[in-house]
Image 1 (tube, one colour):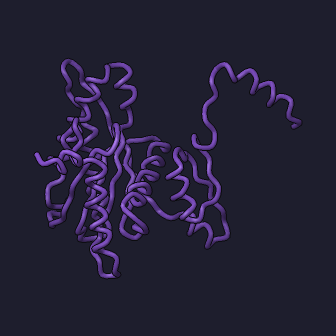
Image 2 (cartoon, rainbow, N blue to C red):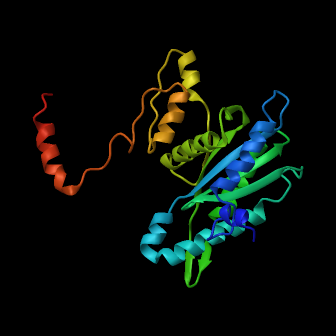
Image 3 (cartoon, one colour):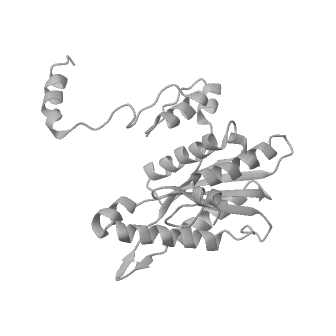
Length: 239
């Protein structure tokens, strides 16, 4: 395998990695900048119980689950959508239990919903790993062409934000990213972004016009030894 292929391949699943899918996605974004461009979508997937699987059954079992997810994705992403019409789909493992699917040449705006539902159903089926029958559904976020402002990383980040909302609302579902901050502003309302974990997520939220947020990035968990001092300080603050 050429060195460039190795650099763009995930060692565990033999899928494309983040660098590879960002390159392909950027080409799609650049090709579809005009009003007449094709419809496309990014689907960001994260396992709902993967940390629990790793903690209870071990990392070796977790790795086999990830490989099984990759196998199902490869089999599911045939070059036809749920209506039997041609499109182009490809997937990658980008980090830990996170996968990205890119669907290009969508025939209709609503086609991505059928694809998302099919993937959720497929990936919710149990995995047989040795003597274990493992249930590991996924949460999914979707970002579509109208949100493709900037580069591939920014669009993937938007899909990631939608995925975090899917997890927050119970998991095993998908959420479509919408620039709700813009809608709220037009109605004279304000929005608060929840669950912000990284500087990159905060930057995307600010680009969308939302200046208020909360989450791990701003309020990290305290060490157990620091809790008594924090409680003492909190109790001294006038109501």
